[in-house]
Image 1 (tube, rainbow, N blue to C red):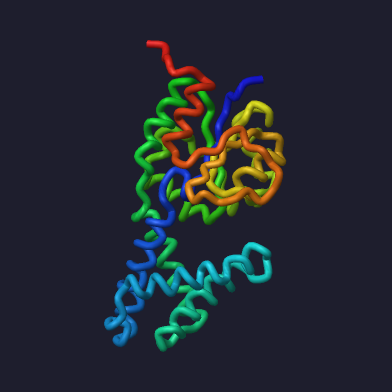
Image 2 (cartoon, rainbow, N blue to C red):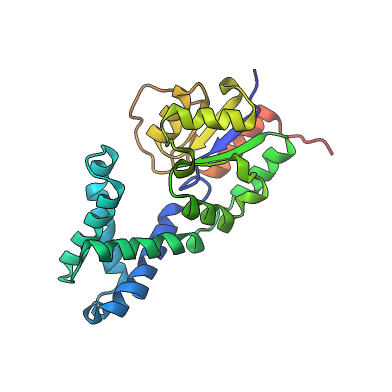
Length: 249
């Protein structure tokens, strides 16, 4: 049975979350912290981001292993960064900082150059398209709007963990996509950049997967994706070999 539907991860798959994240955090630093704390005007935004990102990475494993909640993760990475610069930080300030971040991160999201060509090609091939992403509804929809993916992917086929009640890599979020697309698991393929969420998750649900390994990370399991590529443009080349490069006029 051939592939009739394709699901896409959002962050670092259709656009660079790393770039948007850095720009948004620097904006929050300049707009929020610098206005409230006079001393912070002596700190370059790039230096603040460097320490903040180090704390993100330092405590990420604890969050992934569910040793701390998302709220606790936000608090600790913010408060530890503020402590590094001898600036006053507390949990309420951390929440205000992250609330601003989630409001603006979509404004800094721009699509990878290959996104429009890829989605347009698949639409012309009559392939059903979906986005399956972990995150907050408002924030993820703002990103999708900013990168213009809604031109090809219907809102009903955009599945966001906060709204779905499940998150990747749980099978249930992929099974929800099957129902929305009216397709069987063996007819579906998923494209994403994270091994656990975007390879193990869909493959455990019976889907095929294309691993967008832009960071050249090593696999964490014995799963064998249909293909491993380094950039989104390579996904188009892989799918063109499957669906055919020639199109009906």
